[in-house]
Amino acid sequence: MTRRATKTQKRKKRDADAPRPEGGPKDGPRHGEAAREDASVWGTEDVSSGKGAGDENFPVGSLLISRRLRPHVHAYYDFARVIDDIVDTDRLSAEAKIARLDAMEDVVLGRRQAPLRRDAQTAVRVGRTLAATGVPVTTATDLIVAFRRDAVKSRYESWEELVAYCRYSANPVGRFLLLLHGEDAASLPLSDALCTSLQVLNHLQDCASDLRVLDRCYLPLPWLAREGAVLEDLGACRASPRLRRVFDALLDRVDELNAEAARLPSLVRDRRMRLESAVIVGLARRLAARLRREDPLAGRVKLTRGDVAGAVLGALRVLP
Figure 1 (tube, rainbow, N blue to C red):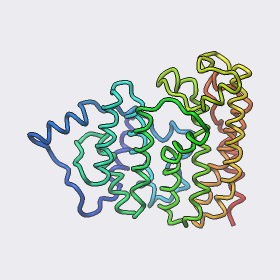
Figure 2 (cartoon, rainbow, N blue to C red):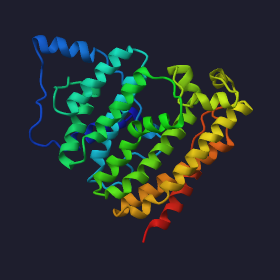
Figure 3 (cartoon, one colour):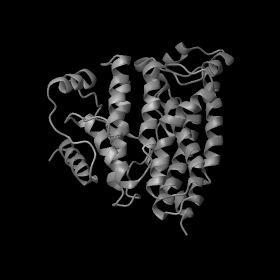
Figure 4 (tube, helix red, strand yellow):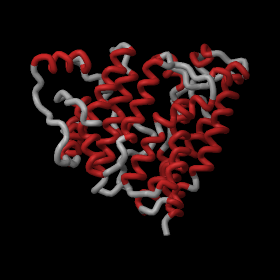
């Protein structure tokens, strides 16, 4: 059996395991005017990248999550992956991207039927997960707010503007996981700090390819100007000293966020989720340290198996 076939079977099993509460819009064939409207919004092409949880820096639905909750985590992740792919594809115009994101939101909210296609059906499944668990629907729809922004916005003017973007693009993920586990609202601001840190780290990892492939730059432009750097510096084989200073300034802010997030595990009551959050805090710190030492223009800076092992060992201290 090929690895691809194994992954496909696992995904089908996850989809089958996802809870299906009573009620909600019915899935089925569409005819006439409704079918034509669907075609104009959804198009004929699934633009999913095919990336999975294994392509991420940080654990998604790992074994630390209980088997009972794992299908919900996978349903949420698959939805987030698809809407991210929608906004990053070069096969849709900005208007078409926003229309498809709007349609995904409508499906999550139960206002529209989805075609029987994998990308659209992720919205159906995440809607069922949210209905079954009682986790606020904003943990899904806030992601769409960020990706609508990505469809039309490609430059950032301040750290505050970047943090406001992360409020929608990253923070909902941590909130979903904590609320899924029944954690208190007091843990959410610390989760927000961790998720914002992770998002900025990802922007630093991908700063060259984001500009080259998507014409998108999340580095605050005034920070570049302050150091005498320009966007064209991101196309070099190695970071110039002036660009390196911009990276380090962003990492200073990331270190502050990680210091704040370090208090998160102590507030998490669920033992598995406490360990998961401690591992992710450790991985964020280790990736920040790697980005201090290594050059994201020379090659993608990423975590090693040693980093993962060290983060897991360090996280064991949070267990009683």
